[in-house]
Amino acid sequence: MFLTRVLVLLVARLAVVSGFGMVQPPIAASMAASRSATRGAATARAPSAVRMAMERTYIMIKPDGVQRGLVGEILQRFEKRGYQLKGLKLYTASEELLRQHYKDLVEKKFFPDLLSYMLSGPVCCMVWEGENAVKMGRQMLGATNPQESQPGTIRGDYSIVVGRNICHGSDSPENAEIEIGLWFDEDELCAWESHSKDWVYE
Ligand code: DAT
Ligand code: MG
Image 1: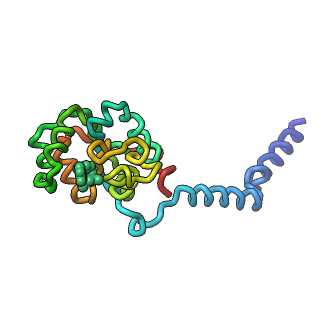
Image 2: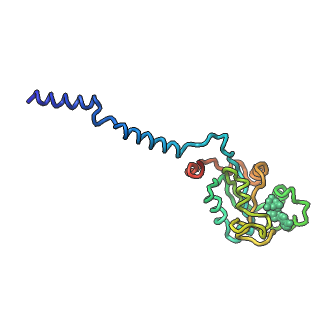
Image 3: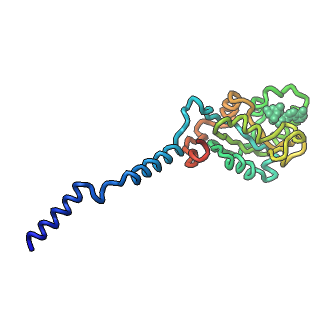
């Protein structure tokens, strides 16, 4: 009886040492390797040199957009596209700030009307970050004159005349940084990592 128990234990020990039931068969091992390679490929990033730089843009919903209840709609378009919100506030602009923001237009005939329109109520200031955010932001806004804006753009869907064209978007990465500095204090911007980054970018 004792000898039988010793024999059984020895056989069991041998099975463990030889790997029986423990080591994956070659096919299972190669399947696991291929699963892990696939996972690796799904999350692998292209070298940073071939990726476009992350960029910030300043998007502002003008007083007509705020009055007409379009804040949520416009926010949602940028959110759904995959851009990341870095700053957001409702703000009543001063004439001085608007003169700086529109410094290239102060001599234009339409500037007094632009000024009183922009002073007529709060604006919604936003900073959005992502690949090519300045150019894509302008595309999403549509042409300056809403009658030249494509349907599907914000201006093309919600406005008719240039003096009530709902939104502003920076026209270059350099101007975006200047405008962000004009409209936001540094501590009003949030540094945060979006959990969907790996699902927006490859
Ligand atoms: P955008 O807002 O597309 O960058 P812009 O910088 O040339 O266009 O002009 C700023 C704003 O000034 C624009 O959104 C509306 C107003 N504006 C521009 N051109 C105008 C015009 N010809 N008549 C009346 N308002 C005008
Ligand atoms: Mg402009």
